[in-house]
Image (cartoon, rainbow, N blue to C red; front, side, top):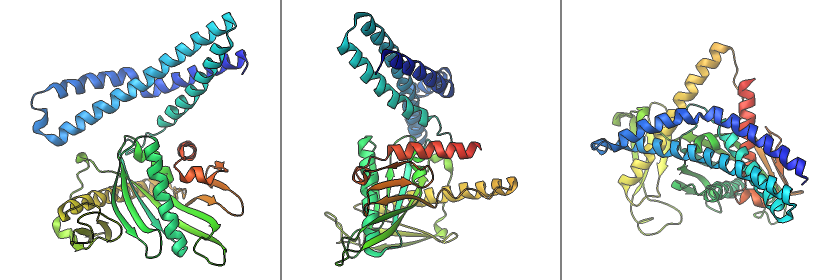
Length: 369
């Protein structure tokens, strides 16, 4: 890349980082950090464990956010100095190093820029994800399992912990459904653009005539509840059923009635959990899933009320949203953003950041219109 192009790229990155700093407001965040540090230093902090966890989690989130911006600013300043020195001395190796760093900074700043677009009510929360096979029989069940692997591999790429609550296996292959959480800040805001119907077109490995098959799977993404949400569920509103876990498992699985199914009688919402070792643990996990669904239901009701007041019919971006084509050609395309790639294998291996970033930008542009 020519020197002038690299200099212009650094100038553009500086403008982008200035905009990010204006949104993030490091000075305001530092003031909140100082206040939280005082709370953490209080000797009675852990007398209220729920509040202590909220305070320490918020402090860690803010400190990491400030550090991320500061580190990028330092790297950008260093890259500018390195480029100037390389140009003055005519050092090709230093010029190549500067170009690599500028390209790396471009990706990092673009990723942080997308993060600043996550300003929804629950965007900073962890995510509760449910995948369900839909139309397409055994191919759909297999597709649902492919999506489960895709999202867990994506989380692994980012070092985000994943906790699986329930997997319902299909008889021949694949899964009927799976529910898991992604335990990372902004996981909900990030993954919420993945919600909707996903479509797979391929030669069915389950068809002995080798015919092309189209199958569908649904993805639901909810924010994980927190203590401040006050989602009270009276015992009288619950029906609790226990049953024997099914599918692959280790000790205690398939040997006792440890799996739990909860039915919320007022809404008819049903959730289950079978991946913990004890009935008590499964019930607690199922309650967390149920609380997230009730929280999302309340949010949707409020949104519907606001849309009715505005005369807005709402958007339908959460329906069919992405096609994965393996035959007769190779392509994965988002039907909302038109973002597409020609390597389905990489996508199924968790390389979906491009789709997520495009989805977040698309959603913000549609919200602003």
